[in-house]
Image (cartoon, rainbow over all chains, first blue to last red; front, side, top):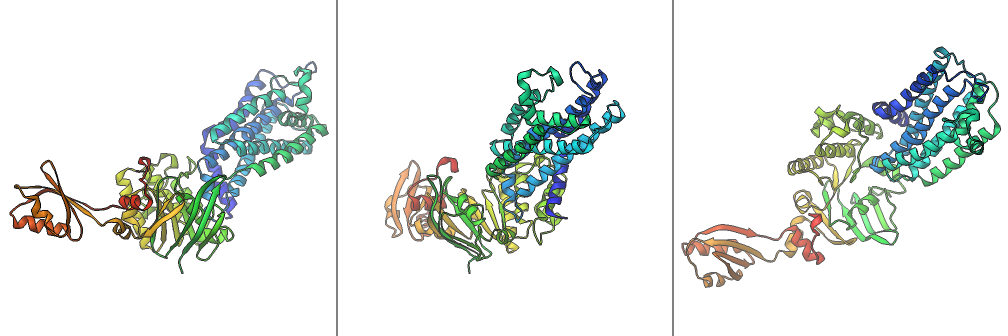
Length: 243
Length: 305
């Protein structure tokens, strides 16, 4: 078994043992689907511009945001704070393997959450499936990479695990607002819409909803996600410290 | 050839000189101590040996290799236990050891190592549930799991209770008995005196002296002190007349005799000849701490214990 595989196996076990990450990743999207699905949010509503894509995409995007903005940076900053990365750098294995393993574990958790949301949407709430599956996958991957890149930057800048959690939450709530979680569709005030189009969570949710409804995600959205991934990811890579 | 060769090591952090000028060699199979107060540059020195830091001057060779340039090779033969390095809270003892074993080309048997370190019953216990002593033993196990030829152990008994410290010392001696060369960083005098074959006294980023613990003490131990209460009155002149005695003073009912050479023998036989018994007899010899004070001209700060 290769070193990265071995580390990833151990990190997966640790991820599942941590009740916070397991609950946030899996229970939150299911809970959102069940609660809002039961009160009827999910039907197309021409007056507000909310489509049936909104509910599953929101559940999915929240999972991605929690993993990328909170769980990933908290774990990595804690590993650095407690000297876990430093300890590994005394062995022949570079601590970069832990970072890679964490990215893989979080990505797999996100894909698992996405599969659950898609199954619930299709089988329980009759919301159908993404009509443009390829566009949906592209939007999903770019949303994940953009949020994870931000998470890596938080992990690079936060001095402690607790600080990473705080910074993550500070980013999380405005992200939800600009993504239109509380003001979906046309309910979003017009001044906030330009920010929605390019903020990572907002651009991600728009791209995913467009694909769900059958069209191609907007170029602005995809470009914004790609720029965040590349630029923020590069800054994170330059500033990340192992100890 | 020495197994570790440090020559004129110099390391600065910003404007702070952490290590000014440190040179020493470590021979294969010995326990080499690096002793000094907090902030003396001990940890930085061993971090350079382990290749975790790049020296700003001088050279470090481990088995003839450069720890920075030949990073991968050095890490295969050198195991390190670092200060304040923990593990993920929820990893079990067996998982941690198994994971670290997988990092090395020919690792030790993790199960055997757990037995040797008295952790066999804790294999399935999570790191967060271990006691301080158990965490420390696991940390030593991780340093040894790669079957290293050299183990660097930094402040490994800090924070342990007296029993756990003694157990850890015994463990270090067992590790050495397997042929592993040990570099032990400590600010505990008793630990250095008990374990080390040779040690370097480091102060202010410089080596104050290198010798065996007994050799270091002998350098400053020119005088001994005997303190006792005579069982019957005794003229001081009886003792001052002895060639080995340099001074006699009285503290209440007690006599304090200082001198050189074979002082205890000379004093006790003289007392016996006068039918005097020395009650509450105590002898003070120089300790490693006295040696440190004499060689650096300053005391260990109290925090350094």
